[in-house]
Amino acid sequence: MTKKTDISTILPETLAKSLAEPKSHAELMKHKRLTENAFPHVRMRRLRQTSAIRDMVRENTLSANDLILPMFIEENASERQAISSMPGVYRETEQSVGAIVKEASDAGVRGVMVFGVSHHKDHTGSDSMDPSGLLARMIDRAKQASPDTAVIADLCFCEYTDHGHCGPINDKGDVDNDKTIENIAMQAVVAAEAGADIVAPSGMMDGQVSAIRHALDVTGYSHVPIMAYAAKFASTFYGPFRDAAGCSLGHNEHVPTHRKTYQMDPANGREAIRDALMDEQEGADMLMVKPGMPYLDVLKELSQNTDLPLAAYQVSGEYAMMKFADQAGAINFQEVMLESLMAFKRAGADMVLSYSAIEAARWIKNV
Image 1: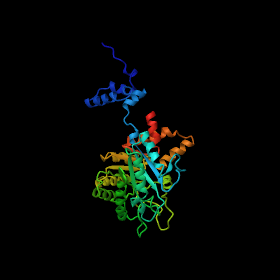
Image 2 (image 1 turned 180 degrees about the vertical axis):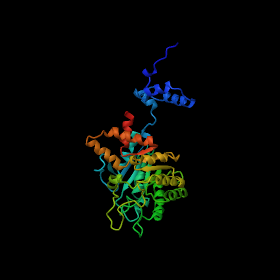
Image 3 (image 1 turned 60 degrees about the horizontal axis):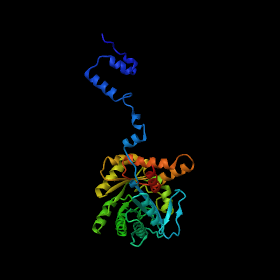
Image 4 (image 1 turned 90 degrees about the vertical axis):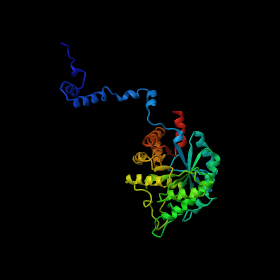
């Protein structure tokens, strides 16, 4: 008689008991799946043993091509100014912007997004609709400095209005949606004429993408793509940006001190997807989720519901938290920044706007 192996000595007790008892066909198949796909037969650490193996099985990669640098350009400034709430970030001058765009290009960053800090503010933000205004000038300077860099024009009015909101205020004290989209269509044409490669409407006005698409098409700029701020939340993570761009609220009486009537409620995920897909229907070529890390769930779900390229904006508050934590010795900024950028790629982003784009591009090359 053939001697039987005592399976209790080589298998966990539960499996030994299972093997020792008679089984139906269904039970045998279930056991087969268990033994073929469970420890110790499967060891997840096998594919983590060496850097070469880890590189080969890595699901997502990060490159300088994925990065876009947001920039602040201040009108009539004689020298660049450090932004205290965003260590390492400056308000550039109209003269220094070209050098920074060129520096970004040399590091491998393929795109920049320009934000103006206007000294000619009024109720409607009219300077941004002027072909000789700050918006047009800074686009032209950026494009002249690096013709191969994609210059993205942020289309909004908050930096150009004296009240800081994203469009003219109506009699009810709220932003006038329909007047704003008329104005933003004109703003888009000014940006395209100045040389913008992409326009990015950020005001979260209903119908803004459709208005911009029509205006560009009828003025000969049908080739200019729209990167829609498709899911932009009324977030407190924008705090440092408000200081940097000179568009904080609360300076005017009878004007709301928040943007909750047009930017999205942070509690709403389904609404974000609906809003983003409406922008796609209106003619957007790319969609953006903003802020970034607190809304990775929205980014992931959107990536499963659209075939358009997706951008994530790592906003000022996210950047500042990492910078100040690094200064306090709590984290390593380089390591945490690269990890956070990879998180955007894993969640489905094709592009990431980050104030650390130049640094990150250099780090990636040296990894």
